[in-house]
Image (cartoon, rainbow, N blue to C red; front, side):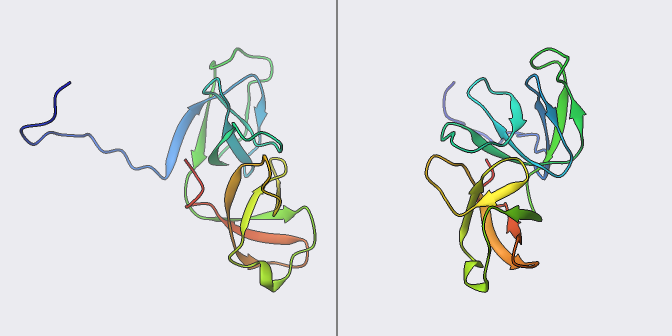
Length: 137
């Protein structure tokens, strides 16, 4: 397709809530979710630099007995969410990047883990509020 020479309608769709096709898995509301190399959505996991962080599941969808791509899950792409930290957190951790340890736990260890956001608040020594906006794809 050639470059535009006139105005066009791009049919904008608000991007705070996106719908993704699920792999053969169960995704729980409020958990970290990622796209894998097959282009399908799964619970976030550690040790997989090829996974792409998609956001936080808006709903629980169980496609564990279905077919790949046979169900869809809405995913929140913006905001801050409370997650368990893999190790104790301190005030000095606010502003630091956090990575997926699993679908409900975050870690400051970035090696081969996907970035899920930045700490914005401590709830206590084991829970941290993560702002996902700058990490979500």
